[in-house]
Length: 253
Image 1 (tube, rainbow, N blue to C red):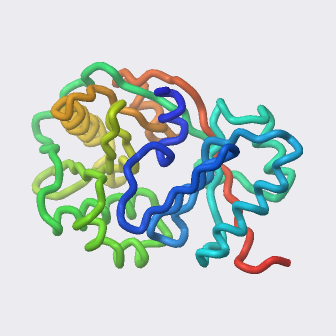
Image 2 (image 1 turned 180 degrees about the vertical axis):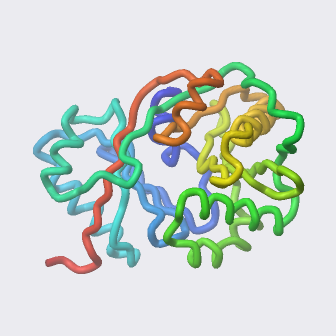
């Protein structure tokens, strides 16, 4: 169960305002409030169903005015060569094309004393934490994200933690509570503050959140930037995920 949650976190987290999740026997399509916030997960296909499912997913997205989606293909996906078959059909590797699915079931190391790490408490802190994520990830949909901030702050079931250095938020991450543990998303540190323990402090604050909720497990994916530190602080690999991007346009050609 933990492996599947770590490989496909959007399929298990609580839904917020504007979120939609379509679950079928062959895949799960997760859509967020932003037009580009789409991902296909939990693929359980036969080889002769790939073209049909691609067309079905694209149709569902076009109906909602969306023209691209990510495919997160985990180690439990079928057929086993699904990544290669999707690449043959025109999908491409995403910017960060590979991640490991990892879980933590013991306390991470404590953070450096000069850092303050806690849950954000005001809308201004929430907005500043999101800005850190946008800058760290070099996001291209900042305007769309900024327009959704107020609704997300008011209604989203997810949680935001941040890390302060000299009074400035330098690291931030989102998480979502589940009965199996805390799902971690989007942990990021500003380039100028890296190497000072901010990401470790962020993980520790989220571990304390999971403990308070009675679910002492952190579940996430580690990409190229976060994977080394996640493994150093005790996260264990349970699977892997390949990230593909399908840009298909809104109209059939």
